[in-house]
Length: 307
Ligand SMILES: NC(=O)c1ccc[n+]([C@@H]2O[C@H](COP(=O)([O-])OP(=O)(O)OC[C@H]3O[C@@H](n4cnc5c(N)ncnc54)[C@H](OP(=O)(O)O)[C@@H]3O)[C@@H](O)[C@H]2O)c1
Image 1: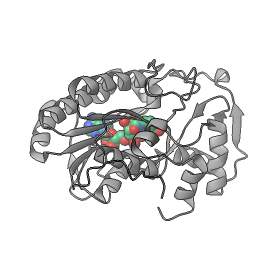
Image 2: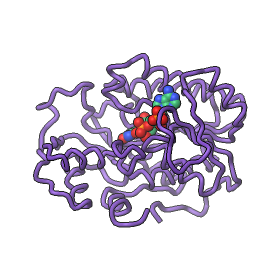
Image 3: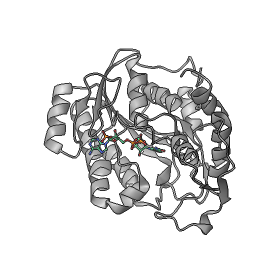
Image 4: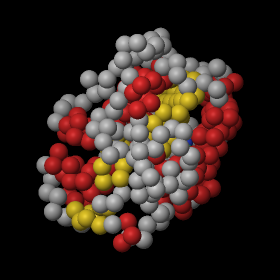
């Protein structure tokens, strides 16, 4: 079992109709696949039709009228909202587009969920924190240092304001197989190494990385649970980006000699790097009996099993 599952906790075991947004993305695709095991899934995408998810719905979530119409027609009992502009550098460059999809589309989905009595699981990020301390708990104040983090913090506020039956799942750096082959943190790094490039990784940047199929199953549990509010969904280990890179190479059997150790202050990062946005996810475990894999466990699942 990738995560532990406490028997005392009450889950809705009825088959739900779940709208999974961003099903062509790294996380959304895995969520749609995991949810399909026990629910009816409508998978939404925009530009890249997702493989293996027949009947996927092409929809621009920034087109309010189209979203309203699609929502009324689909009538989901739950929306798992994974779509976003999730690239911090892109959000910095294209602020209007980032705000439209990350904030305004989320606000509309939250409003529609409330109007139609649907549950909303909104995917947020560790980057709502400034990273000056690390091992953040849900009650810690947010203070994003990037525009991406700012949009997600604004979206969280909109979700809380619009939709009482919500879960905000703050997730961390994700690794795993993406439909495009280039979104997982491991995929990006291994691709560069295989092309013979040097990869510089920070020894002073810490995260609690999450293995995507493990996270996806935990998020489906959050969709099924009765609990509402904010949950940190970090992996079971706080690790530097440098050590994480070495572990990925070991698991994938790839030579790590072109990984160079560096420090944040030696790089000109735009947007600035939040040094330690590791998350304390003990609430997820105590409230729902769910804990996510550590890095070795996640890499074993990805590189040494059929999952
Ligand atoms: N990746 C990470 O390490 C990480 C870490 C923490 C939190 N998160 C959060 O996790 C969620 C998923 O991230 P991800 O990395 O899986 O993203 P991703 O791979 O970049 O996928 C983004 C998805 O959003 C869809 N999308 C973008 N703009 C859209 C629009 N205007 N209308 C409809 N769909 C649109 C894309 O559709 P098309 O491709 O079809 O255009 C794609 O399916 C996001 O909320 C992100 O903020 C990610």
